Image (cartoon, rainbow, N blue to C red; front, top):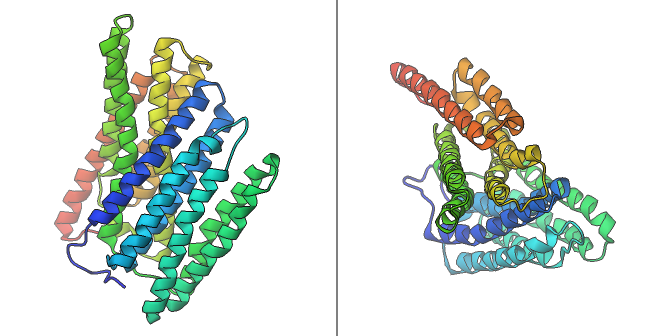
Length: 383
């Protein structure tokens, strides 16, 4: 077991390589969401996106929390990680089938997911063999993962109308495994390592939106009909992405993981942050479709594809990261701005309105942060 107080602990090159594989899966999920939204399948498109993104996020998160405790970086650990990467690529190839709202096909996606999870179970059993102090907990993890994978096999044989409810049950079972396992004794985690890993994944999902914003710039180079609108779209999108980054990294987060309860809340809650940040790219692409006229959505619905992910992101970053470290003024204004961002769906020039509101959120957060820093420096402490 790695020491939770190990100095200079940072993400390893293997972890960074592992993250690159998940770039592919996130990209496929975002592309599928954009396709469904473009075709007018808003509700089912969002539901299927959230399902696919859960599998991506859950596999990544489990590897990350295991690694912070038991990353031995020997040959067997590396081979098991490579198997997980292979499962992630297989799952990525099956994302389009999961996201097909007319005839969903879970075969390839579930196969890739089970590969990832079986390799993860092997890692937990290996930890149980080698580390007696946490054996009861690690065995619970290993057997819990195996039991849930048996449940996922049902998706191969269930009729289509039962697959969605079964998937939701599977999500509940997956989330319950760490709660069940950690009840037997908590594993250790390295605070700075964990917050760095989550920060890196945030940058990964923002990268998808950077790509979408770049597509607007590409359109500028090939079209003169909507030149001014495309330039404004690209610039506004970049402003929003930078605001996403600025707000998330405004405060250090390692001081928030004070117990298993707060760590689970922080870790699980990031699903909303990651999923909304990745969905932003689909909203930007929909804005491009508005300019080209290739869309089956109303003006308000099209605007909401970007405004709602921004609002969800802003609210959950405030709730998970900012709330416990900010002044009362910040804790009133930022949630209010999140509501206004969502309501911007009904405003003309919605994209630009969202960009302005996100900039205001950055100003409020940074001003509150500076006051907090000064106060903490006066007292000589920092949480």
